[in-house]
Amino acid sequence: SAALRTSPLSFGSGVRREAALRQAPLRVFAMAGEEVVDNVAVVLLAGGVGSRMKAGKPKQFLEIEGKTILRTSLDVFLGVKGVTSISIVLAEEYRDQLADVAAADSRIKFAAPGKERQDSVFNGLQTIPADTSLVCVHDAARPLVSLKEVYNVIRDANEYGAAVLAVPMKATVKESDDGQFVLQTIDRSRLWEIHTPQVIRPALLRAGFEKVAAENLAVTDDVSIVEQLPAPVKITMGEYTNIKITTPEDMPMAISILQQRRELAAKTSS
Image 1: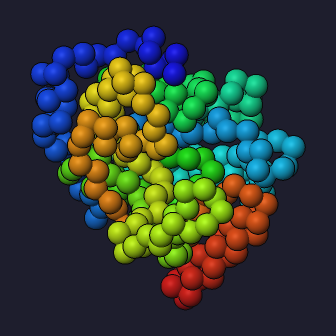
Image 2 (image 1 turned 90 degrees about the horizontal axis):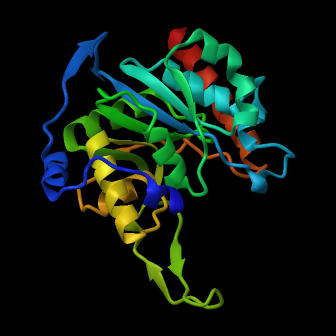
């Protein structure tokens, strides 16, 4: 995109790119029995219009049990130890809906949405602190991600450089080259359904953006940018409850998941 082609990047040489790939694992320290990576920057993607939801407003502002989808996602990361920056990619006309929490927490900042997902991620990347250890990119439309999932994917990215939450594919998948007839059945034992967060070292992400821009590549998610280098991406086992709210049918499912979690928590505490 034009935004990517005209934006200056700081990883112009092959030497620097190699250095990004060889970067040593980041410092991890123990806190309350957890492994926590310090200086994690979150890029929370909330710039979509949600046309498939047919709700008359962006889906991230629909409410689940009295709280917007966006605020529910934001609250997850406000509670993650080691997060020092949260960049919300959101159109300016909607930012007043987060004015209270943004004023109360200095970690929160905003970035403009781009034409494509990769442009939005790139814009968010420009707002993170210089000493960021890892960039944690998350779709605001996945408000049910658990803290356990977040800590696990951050831990794996800290060790391997990049990691993504995913679950084994359940459905049978068939390929068609014309949309009319089946060409073949894909072996699902090798297929994974990709979720977010997707967590990447900033140097790797910037090096990947440089290659994407130079070669005018289109990518569908964040770790795909790293795959272009190429660099390894660790699969972190996620949970099937980390659904993406896309269509009206997803709303009752999300409410049901929250109810099940409350019931489980009540049984555990009793």
